[in-house]
Image (cartoon, rainbow, N blue to C red; front, top):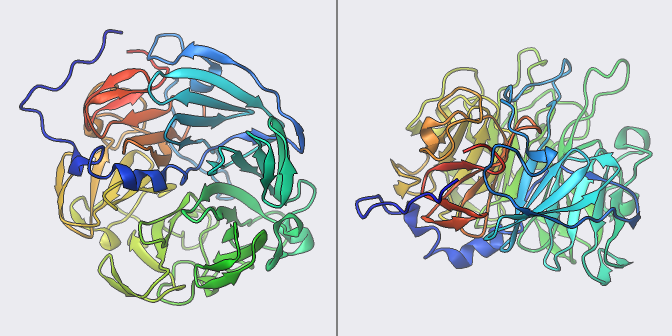
Length: 459
């Protein structure tokens, strides 16, 4: 495919100068990443080498990026999200977890390398300050060490996998939470998201369970593995221990109630991405639970770490608040207050370099404006919600065009070091896509701002 031409001089400027004025801010976001991957137990990983540049092409470079039309986000009969693919970004690479593999794609060259083929299906990956790859799936969190050293309380060697939290053989229904103690002795339900906060703490979306033929319900939780001893999310924490910072362990009877302590408030049955805002607040993508009666509508929620006013609400640290999603089904109220607008799915959340909250919402990518101004090619008012990608129809076509005119089908969203938005598809066979924040060469493709590009798709 020939290079995409640079925009003409009349082209609008990039959103808020995301790739220039806010470059230093994006470093903090480089570790806030969530990816679907598969991982094994402690032992050598199956390492592979580069397969060449990953340019848009009629034949994808590897099966993880096949371009079939995705069906859109959907649930199994008991309300569990049936797909789990997302992406991760650092300053030098994009990580894609699909099936039993982790791929690494060079940020500038687009060269692809298959890093590992592993055992257990996972929903979550992050890259720490040392370059180690953390990944989670089912009931445990593991590390694929990239260098020798002591990490997460263990001596590690490059190329080997280590369990740092949970167990493959027992969940929290069997043995209880194990909170306020060593993470390796704690138990988890269904891990559906993983991230690192700016302090290096591990954030875990620990989803609940319902309708499991006689077993007790388990409520969804946001859990933290402390990287060091200190006070985080209104709790005193000890390095290496596990803590619950949002949700209640049993059931979801009062899901959606706002304003009270986060650990006394239920979350939906399946959690999406968890990330942090620029002020350190937790931001939780809390998708729909369609099997509840009445159904639990999707929301985006925040747990502040300091008192103050944000998103039009007076907030207390450690309490939980809804910043998007009306709690009722209905059509998106584009350009209206985010908390009054219905959402479709809200499976993913990220924070862009301007502090706006970006939401993966099924067939649309949305932004909750943190300030009034021009972002992603649209004038936005603080606290309102806007579509920046997707035309409301699930799909993966329209590459090279404006993102708002292209069909999308989303499970997750990540912000890379240049401020670009990386879209994880709802269908693991569909391509990962990029919305450029500025005109430049990214992942081996010349891109225009606010346009969308597939990695490994036909031109």
